Length: 374
Image 1 (cartoon, rainbow, N blue to C red):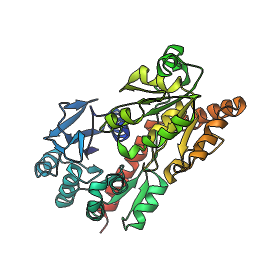
Image 2 (image 1 turned 180 degrees about the horizontal axis):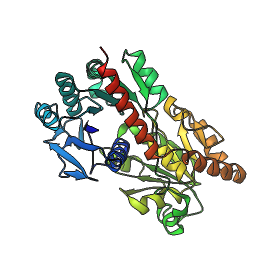
Image 3 (image 1 turned 120 degrees about the vertical axis):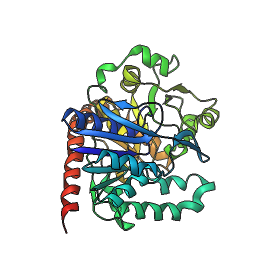
């Protein structure tokens, strides 16, 4: 199969969307498929045998930390020259929308996937809430072109259906259970992340430091608790504000970590904390589980699909400080903590990127078959 993937973000960027797409591309190539990726030009032009065609990016005023590519007519010619059997437009809002329209014009089967809940994010950036209706209009228009649409969780599928987006399916999630594993726990890393106080409960957050991650909601908890050390791992447009906000608390910003260093940061903690309720899934939750961590997560539809309170994680209400404290206090029960750790690892082992990518291939085949029908 010849697969054209048009995406708003790809390597060398690092986030949940890139993780999913990168593993999919690697699996497709290993299975003998020919893959071309069209993405913002960030200086990388090949990945695991797949060609990356870069299109000139720009810096958008409301998100200066990452470069995006606006819709471009050059995508039409790129796809026409590749002659794909299927086009996958990942989050078709800017560059990927050009991929969706190129497939539509050329009569090529089209799959569109929804990864980032932009309308919800706009609620958090007050200067841009005026544009929310226009964004929904664009989302619905672009996804209407697809032979098949994909959401990353059942909760997100239901919300998209309520907005009239048709032909929706849920894409399986995945995690690398070898790259994230309890064996990476390290006393040295724990000493580093707790700033020399390893007796404290070590909570770790891993992800892009952006307002929509709602990390700021943990600030008052750090004022109340003298038994907690917080490590906020990652980088992003909100880092400076967060460093200022958490000043005076026992919070460390170690920056961007990767490879075994990141795996050790996960596995050396007492819990992974996930305060956001805006995610369409939150693949990092599975990475925490694979590391053998209790996940302390704010309740939301997508999170409830992964975390069962008291079984493989602990849940709290994101606007209820007492609820968060109660969840953290439950971590003090050694038997419960042991049980959650075992169950979390067992849950993560049910998923693999190979299975998730094979699932995506089946959706490509379904889109091709649907496209052939009168």
